[in-house]
Amino acid sequence: MSVAERVRVGEEKLLSDHWYVLKTTRFDYQRRDGRWQTMSRETYDRGNGAAILLYDPHRRCVLLTRQFRYPAFVNGLDELMVEVPAGVLDAASAEDCIRAEAEQEAGVRVRLPRKVFEAFMSPGAVTERLHFFVAEYDNADRIGEGGGLPDEGEDIEVFELPFDEAMLWVGQGRIVDAKTIMLLQYAALYLFALR
Image (tube, rainbow, N blue to C red; front, side):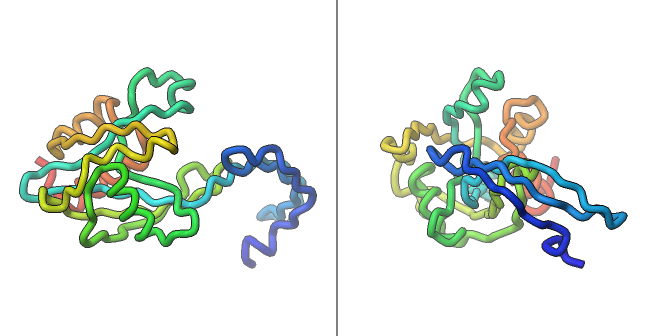
């Protein structure tokens, strides 16, 4: 039996459509023992997204960004968030999205992005499925300073970090963004040999 056969959607209410879409939905779910249970959940639909780790295997470094994230700030993060370039797909393909985000945020033209996996980042409340990419870069791929799109409120700092130092930052709690940690862990397993 598919999961779709175990869900009967009932009443759905739109709570907000300001930035993205927040809904509350009442539905019946058939449990493993066959009983039906009525539940209510809120879902935040911000669209699907893509993230990319830009890495230089010869110099053994990664290109990262720092930016202000209000939700993290109100939950106690009193510093800029260290991240990989990422963005919402909107109507673009995951690969087209990540190429545009790498140019806008990091100032890098991506030659050969390679999709490595997909993941739901917060499946208890957020519908987003994130597409994860990696790509090599070097100085010839730099086409600008990056920094993001000011009209979208972006004020992004771009910096290089030796890979081993990036992994130390994860362990020290200096990198706390899940998508960035996941891509750095992927790099540790498949792109760089851990020392």
